[in-house]
Image 1 (tube, rainbow, N blue to C red):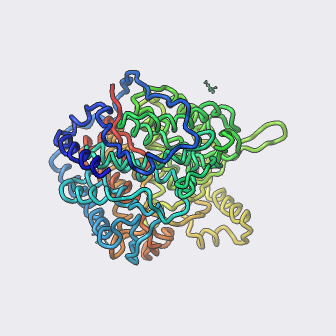
Image 2 (cartoon, rainbow, N blue to C red):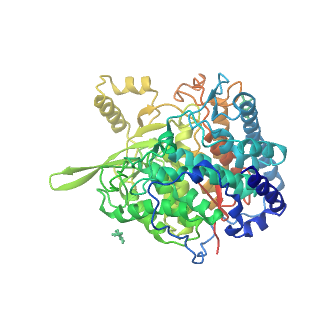
Image 3 (tube, rainbow, N blue to C red):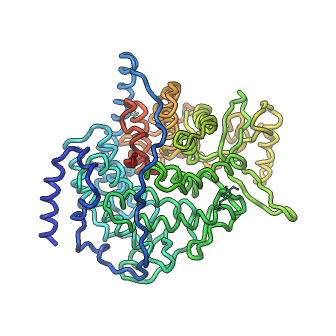
Amino acid sequence: MVMGLVMAISLCVLLIDESPSQIRGWSARDFHYIKAPDYFWATLPLIHPPNFIRPLPNTNPVSYPNVQFHFTQETRDARIVREERQRAVKEVFTRCWSAYKQHAWLSDELAPVSGNRKNPFGGWAATLVDSLDTLWIMDMRGAEFDEAVTAAATIDFTLTDMGEINVFETNIRYLGGFLAAFDLSGDIRLLRKAVEVGEMLYHAFDTPNHMPVTRWDIHGAMRGEPQVAGTPLLAEIGSFTVEFTRLSQLTGNPKWFDASQRIMDQMAAQQNSTALPGLWPLAVDAGGMVFNSGSTFTLGAMADSAYEYLPKMSALIGGQLDIYQKMYEQAIEAALTHNLFRPMTPTNEDILIAGQVRMRSNGDSVISQLEPQGQHLVCFLGGLVALASKLFNRYDDMTIATKLVDGCVWTYKVFPHGIMPETFLMKPCASNDNCRWDDASWEEEVEAMAEANNEDATPDEIIAQRRLPRGFTAIPDKRYILRPEAIESVFVLYRTTGREDLVESAWDMFQAINRSTATQLANSAVLDITLPSDQMPPPSDSMESFWMGETLKYLYLIFSEPERISLDEFVFNTEAHPLRRLKG
Ligand SMILES: *[C@@H]1O[C@H](CO)[C@@H](O)[C@H](O)[C@H]1NC(C)=O
Ligand SMILES: *[C@@H]1O[C@H](CO)[C@@H](O)[C@H](O)[C@H]1NC(C)=O
């Protein structure tokens, strides 16, 4: 094995000498040597080997319309401002990166207040892997990137202290992180790590029906114990396609594509027979392959990336399979009708929020009931609708995308620290077309919401105690945990429309976030962003890897020249890792 590795390494040195564009042009067949033949997960026998592996599609990619707005040359003054902002974001990243290196190197996370380490993702250096492509994108490509890749190459995916591995998180953070860093840099060590993660995750699919175990007893799998798929959340089972397909494209081994496609077959077949046709319920039964039983429907938490990956797969594979566009269009049409609502606001904003729907029987019929909840997480949707609007020529959807993104930006603005909370409720307008602010009906709703929670107080008391901005009826979760989704959508809408006010909003959001979350060492999630602006929100000593992997990357890219990670060349996975699109 040692010999094999030495040979492989010397081969890569030869190959990496080429320019990235040449690397890109290589056929996947050239990568056969990256396989380490003795790697544990690659040699562990499967209990249920599939009797057929579907090949990657080999049809020509279709030529999709350009996603990015046609930006004109910027003025010198505009460039100066932009580059100052870009530097400011990089400064915050560099500070966090140094703190991680100093205090938590090779652990999953730095605890940004205490300086301790945390290992909630297998202990495989989640922050390091999630940050690799950010280092590259922020031009920290020399010694800094190389040191990070060298360290990442030492991660051992056959060792962990954790009893249960979250397969979804491992896929989006680790596999996505390695694939994107490889797609950008062409450093073969990164593809080799991606294969190691891929070989490991493939064993989570080793069940009688080939559906994955998403909360995975990794040690049982190592001992070769039989396993069956359970009842995962929709997002956890529906978000493998993008990473698995990219891994198959790069290695020439279709087994990962095949594994993720088996899930998509089930989702496609059952999409029309759910209680809300077009959408899938929040939780599914993977063991029984039932994807159409359940009454709660949302594009937010626990479901989100299953929808996100439909148009993103189209972008990744250049439309080689048209099923993804069909599934997306059916989903978004159902969501438009049932989930999206216009909230009543004091300034009569023309915005949309994506809520949650419960289907319940009412005599012989089934009726849909909207829970007008907004979430920071669901802010990804505006950007996604904008992307799909361009790809699939769905012109009218750009209006929807705009209203969704404007809704997230507005929500940031109306809170005292300039940051949106994790979750909130608002009063929906009677109709999306026509809505007038009305104090009395807002207060009634506040009171009704409180009564539902058995609280006895006047609306004025509740509004004061809960610090509810006008229009909000409850704030169940007051935290901000350094999430990216609002900024992500601002970035995508900016790149697709060129709307300059979005850049100003992003700058305000960045400053607001840094102001409220900076610690002595880095940045921390905070517990209550509804506090008055002169009181610092208390930190919770947590900095998840998506802060450096996603939030700061999207911010940096908003203040970059538009060609940097162009949406016409790359598609982002749900952890903000850009993967190269197949183009016609
Ligand atoms: C971010 O906050 C830290 C701590 O307050 C501060 O030192 C730094 O200058 C801020 N950075 C920017 C770019 O605002
Ligand atoms: C689902 O319903 C839509 C709209 O009625 C239809 O266009 C589509 O073909 C159906 N899909 C399947 C798989 O039956």
